[in-house]
Length: 424
Image (cartoon, rainbow, N blue to C red; front, side):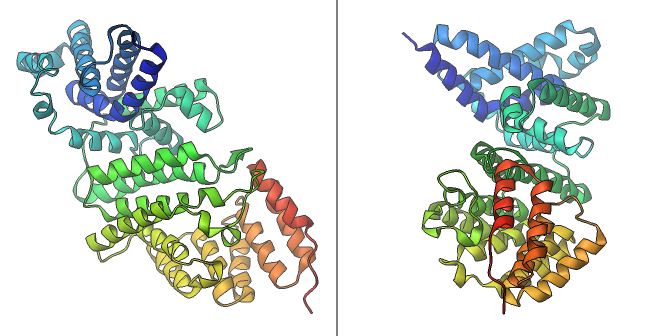
């Protein structure tokens, strides 16, 4: 007899992999991304009800897809508002739907990758807010439930549900369809997709709130989404650059926290605990990105910086001069005060704390990072290196008051309380 609990786990695992494909197929049929996602979810619910009773189908993904498409056709038939659409797709489409579960399923689905890629671009459409893009991408492409997304971002299911609902309505109102942009539209739209994936990763890598500094589930999901995108768009160097960047950063996970959960900063980490297999995979992705284009974009450059750290078996072996040069190239490609701040940190090791502090003080005067807790944190570190202890402690306390993450706040307060001898 089939174990219902095991079947449910299997259904959920299949859904995580197949969600984007199922939604993309239905969206291609009915031309409504929000409705397509709803119908795909209906198929998932039916699987949860039917598979424990009847057993797993031979091809679970095909079962979900054909079930969702049949529901779409039923919806078209009975919805007065979609009768025109039924006339457009014609009877041939109905017959093709009925054939989905047959032996020619793979041939019928041969263009599914283009549809999934189009769905990725739709879920990350600029018409949506950043939070809506993240939630919709995790739901449609990642296959996460509303509860899982809410838990990941420490909010309520109703909040995430409303966010996703509003996002679907916005896409419908704007007439967004599943298509891959081309020409001049491709670069900014791809940048939006990469931004969403990296935002998901960063929330896992250094959580903005809550007790945990690291949320591995979000990092893993972002890397999975990045790899999916790399398979769908293998000629885009920035996609491979982002995968490399996330994998190198994720490789440090085991070394980033003490047994009590306290954060361990990069230069203090035990590098033997880094995941060197993941690093090798990341470096291969970075090589692919470099081979595809001689002009390095922001994610390729950030991955190159991360690779410099990965190439140093000890903190003392870090090539800080190269890192400064890479940051200088990065700030020309994508000017940002955060990049200037990171460059100042590298400068402090390559040229000393005094010139680095001059850069940070200019950032303070500009007010560009007034709400960014890492600005006073970096300034405190530079002041401490220069022997200006009283000022350094005040900066660490200011940084602690600005962060909502409890683990990071505790670290900053410990640094503020440290007793350091005065520099002669």
